[in-house]
Length: 444
Image 1 (spheres, helix red, strand yellow):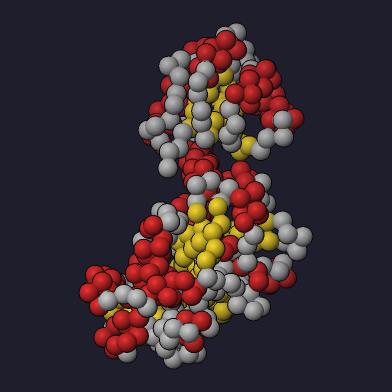
Image 2: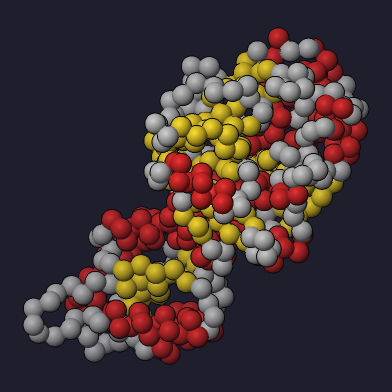
């Protein structure tokens, strides 16, 4: 996926150009450190003619528009006329306050630009400060990451395997909604298609998949041999379909079909697929899979998927769990990812482990309001060094906010029972992405 950021340092030549040049040079350095491919002009764009000449033939996925000095609304109007992409508006701090002349007047320019953006109906992100300030660097990085994911979503193919079980309709998606709001292409097949394909493989064809699985999961030798073979067949069936159809995320039906119609769960397959780069959710939760994809893209790591199942006020923690599906890469180092049997069905292999500790995590969920509109759940925390809490896979999250209040507000707010946990602090990135997608973020 290609992604292009363009830097547009606008202004006029009647302000203090020495100060403006210093800020321009520092800004270019900052942006190039954040992303070496950022398109930057060789000099400040101090007239409409200079701006028009630089924009000629340019396309971008993100425009960083900086008021080096004051610039009137015509500058932003020209940018919006030529570029159809998210905008990060950057105001510079006035460098000197000494009772004499106003060096830059960047802030007034920002009001002019923001007024134009609003008049055009364009959503934008905003940052105030000088290029040497940490908060500015963090904000720019977060917006770049968010815009990169917004661009990636336009080429994402999300596969829904089968239907959601009865009573799990919150995860059911419509292709029109996916495309309209997120730009995502939703594809659907029946679970039996992948099951039928899995039934046709020879032992020789399954050998490399079984070997790979054994390298990721310990204890497979303790699981019924036929179940292990059938698991390898499902692994091959899913992995080859994902590769052949360029699937970036998938939501798979799991129970009861894979227990009753095939005799082997798909849990561990979905866990491995996450580590192979296809964000995978169970119980056919399409919006859960989409949330996992966003979490993985922003954090650069496979994301956890599960239910909030336990609250401990003394530790200020919420435990997230699911019955046997999680990326093997998240397992504690002292145990690794282990094979087991499903806690209710007593059929394996499922995945069994507690997740490793992580100093900063982000809990998120792309959810829907009763009126059908979308919203984003976001909360900061840390993953504690805790062993497996229940049969299946678990992670214990100490939330930055009050855990009891978080649970109570989330329940009263009608949030879905499935959440993703990103192993990294992507909170600011999530907030920026929500704004760029016009999906409100609810902070917890």
